[in-house]
Amino acid sequence: MARAAIRRRLTWRIATVATITRESDTARRLALRIDDWDGHLPGQHVDVRLTAPDGYQTQRSYSIASAPETPTVDLVVQRVPGGEVSPYLVDELRVGDELELRGPIGGYFVWHPDTDSPLQLAAGGSGVAPFLAVLDHHAAIRSSVPVRLLYSARSLGDVIGRDRLDGHAGRGVSVTIALTREQPPGWRGLRGRMDAEAIREHTTPADALPRVLLCGPTSFVEAVADGLVAEGHPTTAIKIERFG
Ligand SMILES: Cc1cc2nc3c(=O)[nH]c(=O)nc-3n(C[C@H](O)[C@H](O)[C@H](O)COP(=O)(O)OP(=O)(O)OC[C@H]3O[C@@H](n4cnc5c(N)ncnc54)[C@H](O)[C@@H]3O)c2cc1C
Image (cartoon, rainbow, N blue to C red; front, side, top):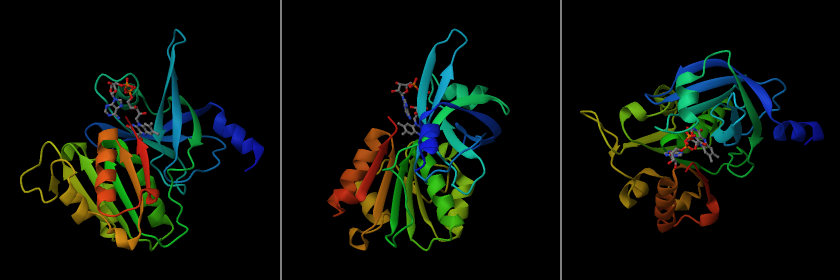
């Protein structure tokens, strides 16, 4: 990679909020315009830095939720009650505001559509954000790689990107949603936390040799990783991103 591109990744730069859209009751998609963006791979993240008027600074990581083909770099941020940064990004940020950001970061937790291996994704809560980029990229390049997504959210109102996920399900991606706390009447998805049976029935079997990406809170990714290993998946096939 060119030296200038590496320097741009490591340097804080300005992103302008182009649009803000609702992705769930508690999450917003921030579409950012960034000059000289060199592109990214689905699964990578950025660091966002906020500076208070008194000079206090704090930073958090956010996955890139848009495919490389998208002209903006989109983040999907879920409000963590009492959090320092996410309530600001979800509730106070406005179109036209500027953010400091660096990236893209991470070369491990990415999807390269370079083999025919099936892809198994599992997300807890806002851990679905990088998979929105993966699925949009999978659609954009008309990939024939079979994909399954197992997604755990607290309630239907907390499900991020429902319309987008419905669209992907409509083109053959298998999307299974588990609601852990509250299910609406007539809910036909899974109920409660991921257990061995849910993992066995709703993920790609180990003998199909899928590549596996798990993302979300530590307790979620560890439970799913343990379940997949018990089903015979090699640990080397499983990549994990922890949001905790
Ligand atoms: C590589 C990476 C990518 C990430 N991508 C995303 C993303 O795409 N979207 C997104 O919304 N978040 C993402 N996160 C989480 C994000 O970086 C922040 O941790 C989150 O927004 C909370 O920050 P905060 O300042 O609001 O809360 P803090 O002030 O840092 O924390 C407040 C309290 O909430 C707890 N807490 C922190 N994070 C979480 C969480 N995710 N869920 C539940 N409790 C939490 C803390 O332990 C603390 O007790 C990512 C994290 C990593 C490491």
